[in-house]
Length: 116
Image (cartoon, rainbow, N blue to C red; front, top):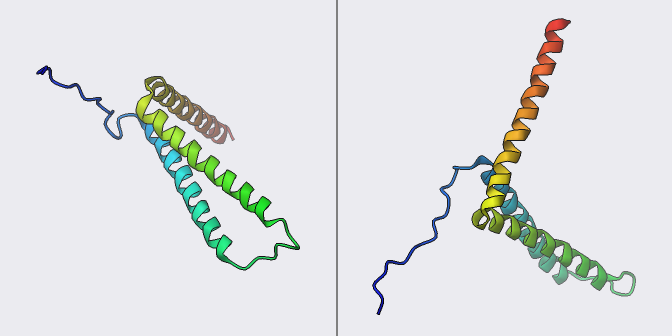
């Protein structure tokens, strides 16, 4: 039996990358909305419905697909945030670029106020 120490994958500490933290929050929100929508669909299916007047199975199918799409996109974002180093780097750069654009906008507004 081999006595080598097993290397554990080290996940990045929480809060180290604000871009990743933002996208993790978005992923959790999408997963929460998708799960809540599926639960609501299960509840609505239990209510009495008029199958002769409306195409209920089509609406329920579309609703379920939209809910699953939300759930899977949130899961994909969470997996990217935790497993993909290029995505984490991109998220950090994207957040920094966005904050710089917002700062420049705010500085232009202040400059215009001072000129008036």
